[in-house]
Length: 246
Image (cartoon, rainbow, N blue to C red; front, side, top):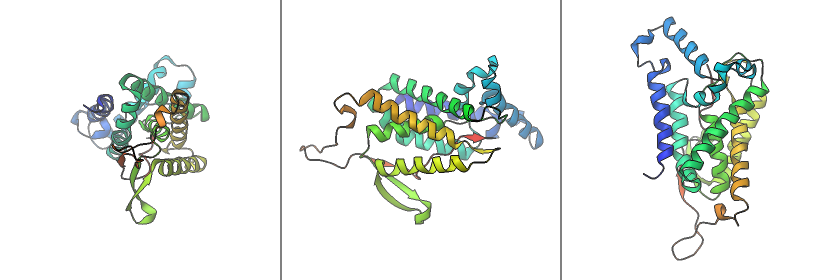
């Protein structure tokens, strides 16, 4: 298997979603108002609630980890898992299985903690893996800057364009930064978690691999030794689905 830990993380997220109330697959959660109440309770139990986490409540201390495997909707889940599949496999190959797993979990937790610290009084629950996935994007940018990313950009009528990672990913990060500055309080997307995760991922890759004589940034070359454009990466859009605030 090319990237076993990436596949395992995807499987865990899908399993957690399937057995939770947001999937709508388990009739035991009921329907209508009962289902909505079950979803709110589920998100509050397993998601990060900044006010509870920063108060030091024992139950809340594990939520930065559990929240990484909880998603608010099918679109939220599928968007995140697609980006984890696309960018996680190559990042795992560069880092190695154990280091990639620790990196993913650590940066994901820190991204959620960063979001909580920025809004310490919030009672909204935050769930989703996109803080961790944003860290993967940041590391990918440093480790594979020349990789070609095939993106569908809405403002260009969804025309597929092949652009290097050093163009696509900083553009995505800038959009997240702008969105974080305009985000209103209340339900929505926790863009700040994306920004924190992306920065952490890039800085980690720079600190871990930057001194290794450029080992993590060697230019891609063809079999005859001539320079090559790097591997092709297919992505449907320049951003993963955001952290969700049900």
